[in-house]
Image 1 (cartoon, rainbow, N blue to C red):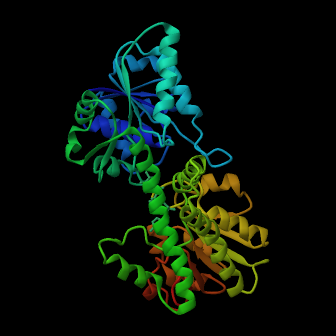
Image 2: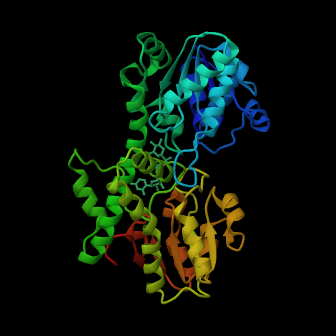
Image 3: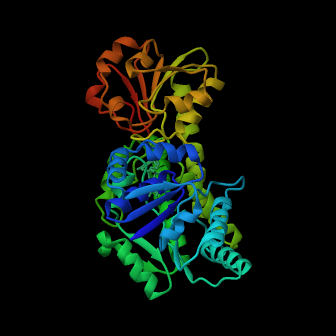
Length: 432
Ligand code: UDX
């Protein structure tokens, strides 16, 4: 089946490759000419393990092509909108790009279409997109049938292609049986994972899923604060909790909080959707409050433990919002560097992928190509992101390089047996 995917960002490129690998003919549409040129040469604007290699395979087999022009949708019966919905000042999802694309589709479509909204959008956006397209068709004096479908993504950065190709479920909000049949053909490889519902249910499922995952994390993080006070170990506590299959162990890893381009944005957006509907989402507000204060709570512990930060050398290991990505959006490390610099600490930092992006924000930090170089002469070490080469670094060698062997493990990931001679401080774990 011919599919147009509009918006070659993180979701659009991943979905284009996944659909191509499922045997469909994919037309990637993107307004940024430079991005198209690099995609046509088989290079991605994002770092996503394994994606570039599959893109190159699809370029060779001519199953994927790219265009700057929205008129390319006329080679397809299915048009997927995958443009960004960034947060506005007040936290609401900004629909500028979605509305612009809807208007362009209305202006250019020549035959019947299924318009699939892949972007994360507030409940009711399907109706907004429909109105915009209807208006453009009326303006052209044409009557072309189309249906709006909601099909949100549940991709995790760093494993997006795996998530796209091995989904737990594919949520589809649609109305007609013909649309249902087309979506079954589109996702023929995952026919057993399809969940059909209404457009509005589908739009809410996306926000609600992310907000619930964020809730699990903030619950673990606040429980970690209590654990320290009552002499418990959060890692053991959440392990014991997770043995109940109604709770599960995933997304209960306590640490310095969640970041990324989704959880913070989507929890804010859902709070605003609630406000607009007259619902005061108190639980979600608490989830946000915990996450907004978790880094400060962690850093207060650092400052107290080493009796002040001014002129101390602090090594920060890990800058991205999580491992296996180059993305630093809303990374807790941003708050950490900002706080340390404000306290006049001397900061060194290491990250396998995140340094170029972080350097643009904090040029005064000394960035190292190696974690052992970053910890040289450090008065304390902070682990902010659990990259494997940080977690498994030579801590004995590091012990000989630091001035004070103090590790603040912001992700509770370094095994104590690796830390002979170190003073270890985790998040919600007893001090060794
Ligand atoms: C998330 C959702 O998982 C995905 O389904 C959605 O489509 C997009 O948002 P992503 O933001 O890429 O994916 O990363 P994820 O792996 O979910 O982690 C998000 C943040 O939560 C990271 O900062 C991570 O460090 C943190 N986290 C995750 C925890 O602090 N504890 C956990 O137990 C899990």
